[in-house]
Image (cartoon, rainbow over all chains, first blue to last red; front, side):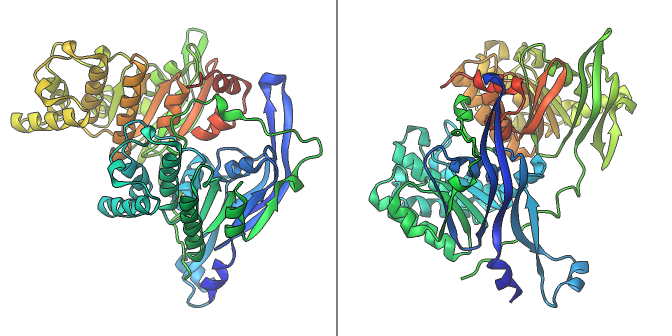
Length: 276
Length: 270
């Protein structure tokens, strides 16, 4: 019973978060993007971020994943862990799991990395693949890093690539040579493979054909059924309608003097963003 | 179906000790500090990038951490047998033992870290002999294994690095450093002397080895793309001081200090 109670609880709660960018190279101009941001994502639900481009939807995903630092407020990830013996006395009898939370606004880098390993995944819009690493390895890597035996990780990666219509002849090739749609499907496979309580989705269907879009919708429904909470940006109205349980309208959290979100990271000629 | 997620999160954080713990450390050149007031902890398996332009103090910091330059204020402590020991209290002999068995140093110029007129196999075998290996066949087998691991054709084992390309020399230097399974490796601009295509290959190789071996690494680089690809955390240095320090992707995606914003905005678009 305790289990059911906790599982219907939030996996992510964002409270009163504020984010302002200070652009030192533009004479210290301050761009307030979000104020009083407040919402939660519960286990098994998919919450979509709504609003026009530039409203700060991607900023919210980056604040949660920790690429951006929030100025104030709290961003808590909730999880269950084995209770310590001393806690069992306090908790209801038989409860072996208690809730723990980490606040990503306060967490040190090591705790953010632990949260990324254990608690949340991120499917970005584009794959930033290292040259030379074969597609199958790119997809299996997050499982191997989390201790899944290599053979099992490869099998699960292969099954998901097959579902996403990536032909076997491509598996041993580096995705850098693939088409945009194929790269995105490799990226989706990599993001959806590990079992994590929270999944962040930044337009996962943007460059997919109808058939693969349907596969992604199915994957999202399966994650929901497994109790995964999801927070996503979907510009495709059909996909949004199919997967969304609720929408959070980002404009409601715009400071009055708001400006469009600057694209700070276009300058970074990086090869891959999810190295950790 | 209801999945229950459990994690060790919250129980492991803080319960172990860092491998290296630096507090307010500084090195002085005459009456001027090359670096000052540097504090950080390095954890097992963690890769820390130190970035900044030339003259920022990053090489001085690396030299001080690697015990080549004196620690004139503050402390640098290293974990030996579950105790954090002040490196200033160790004898030269004990520091030499650390270099033989637990530490490595990858130089920018491979010629500084290799013996250029000793064979490739000899360069990899030497650290094993220094660590007490005596059986020639085993040393050679291990050297072959490491040449393969760093993608040097085994039929080059008896050639000297003087006959190798720049990329091969750098890979050989890495093998020479990693063959004794060190815990902590210092790297000084390990890719910057190489062509861009060779850099990507070397970085990819390094990334894989560091993850497989669970190494802790402190890597000095002026190249933010290198920091992005390989490191977990980044320290940004300017005028001898650490001006920003955080998760690498946070430093690069959401830089706060004016100087860091300048560095990030100066990256050439690929």
